Image 1 (cartoon, helix red, strand yellow):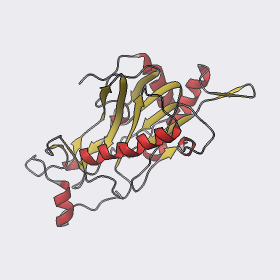
Image 2: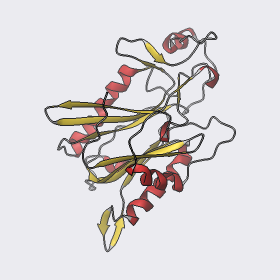
Image 3: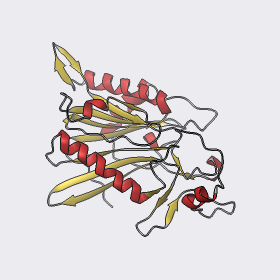
Image 4: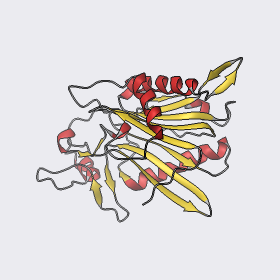
Amino acid sequence: MKITIPKGFKIGHFNDDFTGVTVILSKGAVGGCDCRGGAPGTRETDLLRPEKAMQKINAVVLSGGSAYGLASTVGVMDWCREHGVGYKVMGKIVPIVSGAVIYDLNQKEYHFPTADFGFKACENASKPLEFGNVGVGKGATVGKIRGLKYASKSGVGAATIKVAGIIVTAVVAVNALGDVVGEKGNIIAGAKANDGSFLDTEKVLTNGEFAKLVLGTNTTIGCILTNAKIDKVEANKLASISHDGLARAIRPVHTDY
């Protein structure tokens, strides 16, 4: 599948060996948000609500590092300000940067994302597009019902659909408790049995055969890009219905974990 980034957007990644940041940049785009799950970590998502005055944003940051990862948004603000991108008020430039994080604090030798991560991700937005085990996806895993030992490595991915000249591209970092399933319902990444075959996380939960789970350690976050001319109400509606896609692809989804 060819990934198409609508005109006006750029995507950049930066990561070390354990965690990373993905940033979507724009000189000004209408935004919306629908935040679910048991323990979200976000920044400036209230600004995206339809009744708020701010009409456009300049960046969306997807970061590892749990709550510490929100520090990366400061670097994105710095980069935007240096490049004259942001809301201009009283002679100042205030970049409008929204963000969300995943929990990937799974390694002993772990360095939390910093503002420098965000700045470098912006610098890398001019490089050829790549997805997978990069950026926010560096430390992502799925299928953690039996713990990390039996989980599958995941990452950050994208998909594009084009209809009558309208481009819609979803960029998603999958760090879910549940399994990722294909179009026919087959598990393509998830919790594994001792022999390496895939288990069914929903069945494991039903049978009560799972490790002690920690609240707030699994998150799937993403950003939808489109060239369609929409307002904030429509952007929020698009964000809302996008969760149907998560429900089709991840089982279970929207848990407290």
